[in-house]
Image 1 (cartoon, helix red, strand yellow):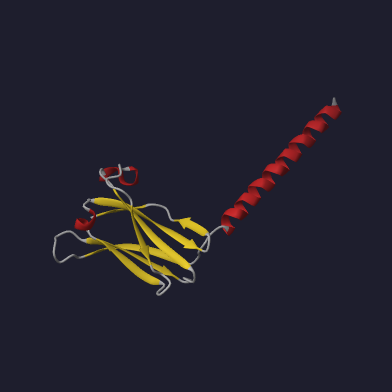
Image 2 (tube, helix red, strand yellow):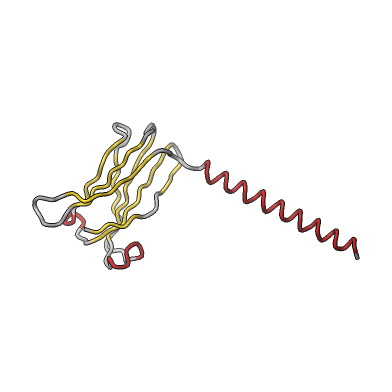
Length: 141
């Protein structure tokens, strides 16, 4: 009976070691798979002189922009009260932006330009064959 418990304990110990090692290696891979580090995005409202609705400006700053390409994806939303979970209004817009010439830049989103009261956006950052997506951010006019 004692041998049975000893054998059972060895199996559980072996299983625990395998699971712990697998979780550790998955965590290491996730950290090493980051394409670009040291970048920041900021959004703010900018006064639009021609209409009474402020524009939304998305700014970016890459500390190391060598070999980086940036795409800002904008998805307009029908039901703004649901924010990120809202129903998509039109097709996804993709803005290819040049970050190689300058590590800092901005994209101005105008209310009349996208014909929506709100939208969500995210960045697609690519370096070599590595592609990374930021989380979706919600903005309203």
